[in-house]
Amino acid sequence: MIFGTILLLIILICMFLYFMQDKMIFFPQPLDQHTLSLIRESYPEAEEKSLQMEDGTNLHGWFVNKRTPEEKPGLILFFGGNAEEVSHMIERVRHYEGWSTVLFNYRGYGMSEGRPGEKKLKSDALEIYDHFLSREDIDPEKIVIMGRSLGTGVATHLACHRNARGVILISPFSSILRLARKMFPVLPVRLLLRHPFNSLKKAPHIEVPLFVLLASDDRIVPPQESKKLADQWAGPAKVRVIEGEDHNTLSANPRFEKYINEFLKAFAE
Image 1 (cartoon, one colour):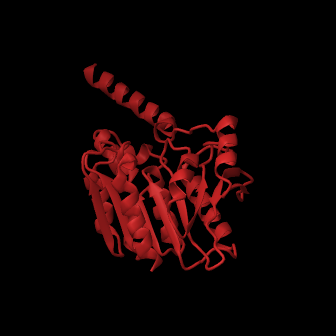
Image 2 (cartoon, rainbow, N blue to C red):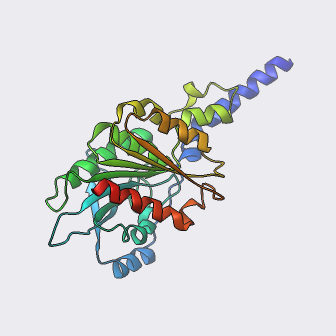
Image 3 (cartoon, helix red, strand yellow):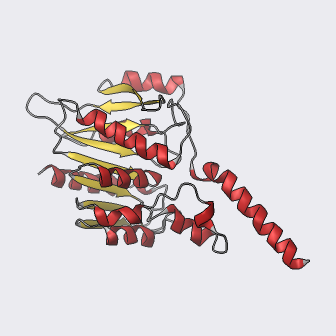
C-alpha cells in the first residue's frame, strides 16, 4: 500500500513536471506601447526590426547601428535570459564602441509572436545571424555572440554552427539537464525534459575564444557548472568572477561592463 502510494506520487510529479516545464523554463515578458514609444524617442540609433522566420512567425527587436564613415563596425548578437525582455539592453550596448548590436526578443517575449521552445529559439538564432551577416554595413570578420543565462544555450548553439570572432557567456549553464538532475535526483529527468539545452555537448567543437562572466553567489546557475562548460571549450577560455553578486545582481556591478568592454576590444584587434 505504501509502495503503491509512493509510486503514484512519483508518477504525478513526473506528469506535472513534463506538462509544466515550459512555464518553469520560459518566463515571457511583455513590451507595452508606452515603453516602445519611449524607446523610439530616446534611441534614434536603434532601428526597430521585424523579421519573419521560415515558419512564418514574426520576431520583433532592434538593430543598434554604430556605422561610421571610416570603417564597418563589428556585430554583437545578444540572447537574453529566460525572463528578459531585451529592450533594456539598448542603453547598455550604446557603450560598446565600434560594435553594432542585434537584440531580438524570443518567441512570445516582447512583441514577438509564437511560443518559446529550445528548437525554435535555436533555429531563430541561425536565421537572425544569416540575415544580419548579409548587410553591407557589417564587418563579417568581427562577429561576437553574447548570451546571458538561458541565452547562453542559444549562443553556444549558434557559435557551433556559424562563424564568430568570439563568444561572451554570462552566467552560463553546462546543460539544463544537469541542473534538473540536481534539483530532482530521483526522477527520470532525461525522459521528461523537452528542452535540455546541452551546451556541454557542443563546447568541444567550438574553437573561437570564450569569455565567461560569473557571479560568485549565483544560486540559480552555480559557478562550478559554468566553469565546467569553460573547461570543455575547445578554444581559449577565460573566466572572470565578480564577488558578492548573484544571478540577478551581476549586471548592476560596474565591473560587468568594464570586463565586457575589455574583451570586446581584444576581439576587435
